[in-house]
Image (cartoon, rainbow, N blue to C red):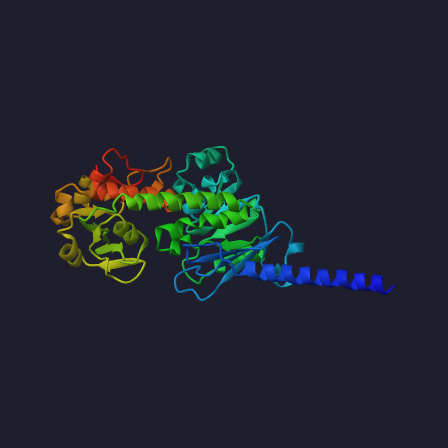
Length: 376
């Protein structure tokens, strides 16, 4: 009897140890953030569920959004069930063409059932779905149309909020449709933006595929940077254009400024602080940029004739005179959407190569630009 009792207690002790070890392992795993470059979200993976935490849904945000993704709510701790998202998602509505690009990259475009402003979508795969009536137009001026979206009954809506005003999405939450905020647009580094593909990897239980794709992008981006490792000339680079008497250009800590620096360009406003846009006078633009060797991103203009017709002062820039103006607005999809705005985020390696070709063509003599081309 004593031996049986001893054996019984030994079994109990082993179970307790294993239980404690499992809890300890879970705790350790909970501290591992699988996001390496992006600053706006985190992914914590457990055995039975994954936590996605949106830490920066918009600039200067103080609110954090947490989503717990699993195939069954029964495996989720009670304290987290109010934020439960059932995965893999079957039907989805997204609100940015960058979201569309991520779906296509992971081969998930057939799960898309609604989007505002279908003309903005350039992907041939999604255009075919639109033509077949499988993706619906659900816009209401600048917002999602509530009735049209509700009729589709998507499993989730991927929202994009420019500020803390989220009431337009709360109506969907109140109607029982989960809304997840995607803040890829807030990221300021090339690899930080691209890493948001992991967000969609979690939703569709394609985490490994998303990781493999992103790891390949990191490798290719690193290789692209190596192309200019031994380049020691830095062409002076201007960016932006005039809109309603204001010259808008990327700030010195922005996404595009990061690309220009990586491509060994001397951006004229590289020392400015901020990640958004500068608002300058024409005089200030001429003062800093009239002597620039290369002009990257002159707004929506695609030809020198358009540029000159819009404002005669554009002729005063050296880059205009030398025909060294490069635009990402030239390549458009079937509906008129600019391909750069859809796909560039997921392919920073190609954006960087385009810029290297623009600034240092001798490094890539036979290269065919993908997104950024010289004006016609």
